[in-house]
Image 1 (cartoon, helix red, strand yellow):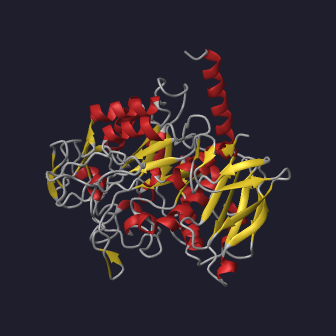
Image 2 (cartoon, rainbow, N blue to C red):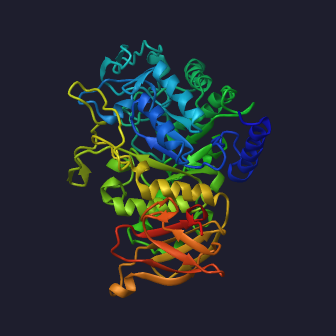
Length: 525
């Protein structure tokens, strides 16, 4: 057994780190263990499989947490689309991913592996206008707005007395009343001004907290009044003392789709936790698609109009972005453009801004017609009876069936380690070629170089330069092209001299568009 002072030291270090990296809200601390700082979204995995993954991969490879798809009973829809998870029927913990006992076991296993659990919560609405059964057997009627599994009835939803549109639908997303009191794409909009509705939601969240989750992703926060959310959050329990320090508050991050202009400003929600900074995704995607130059990223962050780092959670891809339900197909970067996705994700993980989240998705047959993916509804891999298939790693660390498992790609999991080793070290030794080649270090602990150059001849498009890495002298393995195994580089390597200089090369047509080195991948002499 480890001595008591070790656990005290870890607690103190975690608290000190939180002072520097978290925002002003008491709901902005993710409660990572030590220097862990990356979340992955295991989209619609079974709970037993998530528990396995925490123990065999996420914990050992330095991930800080898992975002799980909504855990409450949801509608059973024709074809079993992925978005049925976002149509609640009750607040019972019972979905296609498993029941409450399986969920409890997963939370226990992941916490013990050093990996936090964040639940995607859907408080804005219930189902659309259909009727049927939920995943825990409760009947619902969306037309009559009857949800006996809660129970909710017609008086618990916004109607013509609060929604100004004739059909009760949102048409003007910049109109605050319309966006928050009317129906989002037909989904029955809950009246959170009602104390009864609030208390039902508080009870649900507190049940999850008592089980041991670390926090929540708040779906469709833009469509909920901040004061209603504030009232709900004010009644939440502290986190479970079995896994967290006393008086810890849940981590909450909000889906607030804001790109600037006249829309509902995401700043309205930063006092309630962090916001998912969609401007990060948009600007980084714009750069990595060569619509803007890499060199401009030198001061990327608040100087670009983004919220302070301690208020932000950032991403390149998401369950909505991958299929164009948010953003735009052809602009968004997803798993079908692996080289570009890896490079953009690498920058996100190397840059010291916000809490990064890595998407982990599954394959679907993408068919684009008139700018829309006709298969944007396809749910997770299933057997002939509609049961979700289990995820089993292959010997090469990829996943079986049609699970893509981007979080297991070497380039991505090694950049998670890069971020863990870089810690809170500042960005130093910036270099760019005035166009689409950049390099920088994180203090004297880590270094990355990215090449997206498309202009010029083949020689000009290659990044070939003697650069200041900031690293101590020695031989370092490129963690992107291979791992350090038995003190040998399985991929490329560099020699750093006593002044921190090294010859860096990234060919324009290489398998990966970047190289990365850190002090944890130095060959011992």
